[in-house]
Length: 402
Ligand code: FDA
Image (cartoon, protein in one colour):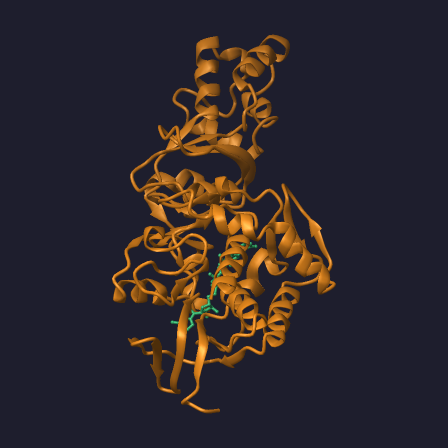
């Protein structure tokens, strides 16, 4: 290996976006080197989707992404669609299935996707430096110089694909954010997203005992009319709330803001309870509520309510009290104190500010030859395959523009 070789392109980060960009650029005839500090290739792809990688979502549109500039992702997503990625998956004879709301998973294992990307890189004659540590990046005229304990790498163009800070235990770092700042690019404040939410331990005590209980809910951020509501399952945990509904809303939640949770997910509980009272007034309140809520949650909820006990019968409640009970269940307002942090988050929200990047190529407007792709950029998808679709699309957009 010659240390004097100047590659056309160096890609730092051999994850979803980095492998895609390297493969596309290599197959266009550019000399590409792919650099990663990890021992294991593409750990996040491997563990994604419960080991089966939810590799895209057929319903992908800019509406499922958060960014300071919600239009930025439009161009890359339109130029490389879920159907394009599916074409690649089919060409590699990977079997897949649709699980839920357009989410596509491997039938077998997420290793299929890693092997596919690796073989696409091989087809582009991509050179590998892995595991390889980069201590410093500098720019000398038209060459980027990457230096570290294992040696130096030189390239005319540099792609940063080191992802976000979620899951530091599998090698996630803030490399992209530091490098952006080094080159005077702005960064949108990063935060854990798609992450469980936590509550003040004393206030959460009554619900902590329900850890493991799961139910379909509708959740939104209280008073935030422009944020979406999510109809998904919610899971109660020892420290707070998790499950798809909470992971989704966590990306929108701002510290100090209350959540609004409809525990019956849009059903009309008030009318239903009043009707049931007329027909079956002798029924225990807890038994009736258990028709709409998991039994343990129904019992716990009644005990929390002023003036109600577990032994009460439906007929003992005046209509206004029954209405108040139903309204509380349909709109549970509660304020998380924080998130479970990057160690439990699926993604990072925020990142390299899209203001400084060209939306077609992902190139830094002020630093010709420098590109940022994937999760490092301030484009964050919902749960359900959208983050991988952004990684593929931004990787392809960059790989074609290099
Ligand atoms: P990615 O994280 O894939 O790759 C970054 C690479 O850069 C890594 O290989 C890392 O080792 C390397 N790197 C980091 N710092 C470096 C440094 N300083 N020097 C050198 N190399 C460095 N999304 C989805 O759409 N469907 C799903 O099913 C899931 N499931 C899922 C499960 C879990 C548990 C997590 C944590 C995340 C998901 N995601 C997901 C999100 C998805 O994994 C994520 O958005 C993409 O992997 C982002 O792709 P990138 O290529 O940007 O980063």
